[in-house]
Amino acid sequence: MRSPTDRRPSLRSDERREAILDALDGWLQDCSLDAVNVAEITAQAGVTRSAFYFYFENKAAAVGALMERLVTEIFAVNEEFTTGGGAPRDRVYTMLNGLFDSSDRYRHVFSAMLEARGSSATVRQIWDDARDAFKPSVAELIRTQRPGSTPEPEVLAAVLLEFNDRMLERFIVGGQLTRAELIEGAAAVWLSTIYGANR
Image (cartoon, rainbow, N blue to C red):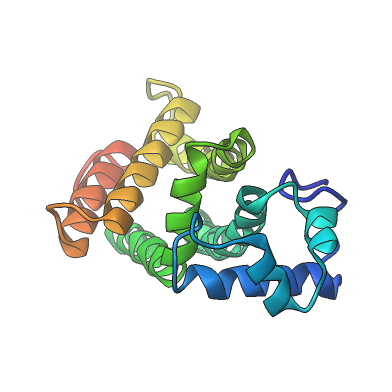
């Protein structure tokens, strides 16, 4: 399936594309997306400016492609949560800690996505598509744990994922609550919504 972040079909083996993304990743660890220019990215990647635009429409689209690395990690966390065993409380806390760990590891990319989301329809679509990709598995978990519940499992899943989205944004940009407090509050919401109790 063609990625909306790439102007051509995504080729994992394409070394130039990966070099561009690696260079962008390095720059974002030191400065904001707005402060990085394409010339700096291409110089570090050892490619031409035209090569950058061969793969990406602009910097925002390249950040969207870089976000795929974070999403891949989160897919693994989500799969363990929705299909693994163990007590509900343990599963929820493992999922939330994995989510926070991945977001923290890619904090610079997450921040750049937040920066780009406001001005790029492409990035907003990437963001929404990434979040929505988790909805079917979470909805199925809700359906098995709370058969016949209302609202529909898909609606509950969408709300929980939107909630996680906002919670991670507060974690990345900063707020009054600590990571531990955010996780504790989020766990209570997930446990009560899916399992009907804080167990």
